[in-house]
Image 1: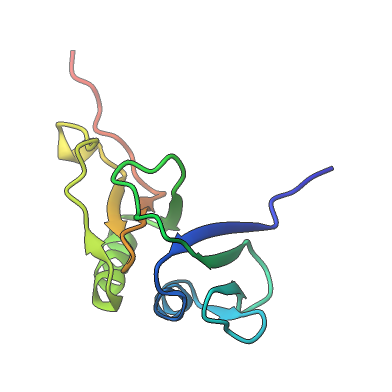
Image 2 (image 1 turned 90 degrees about the horizontal axis):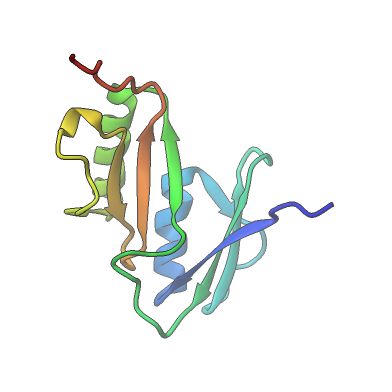
Length: 131
């Protein structure tokens, strides 16, 4: 049976990306950092690996694959978004947000290389529909 061993992100600057994602996720390099490749693993040893590889192509505005990072509730989500922005992430003016901002359980950010990712409020309850 197969299992996901690592999620791989293409980046233009591996050391910069490694510093951002290590701090963002509490990960550490599995082995010595190279200029064009690194595998980051959870510091506590459990969880999905994140591999960073040099890529000559730019990040896509609407990526086909992205990371969802889970926060416990809306307060945790807001705090994590601010922490990630302080680390160098950018807020993305995403055209896929629902018209009613209260319906969104996600915030779209971009890492320093422009790779999009979401911070999800896992405690989100959508507003009740009115009849």
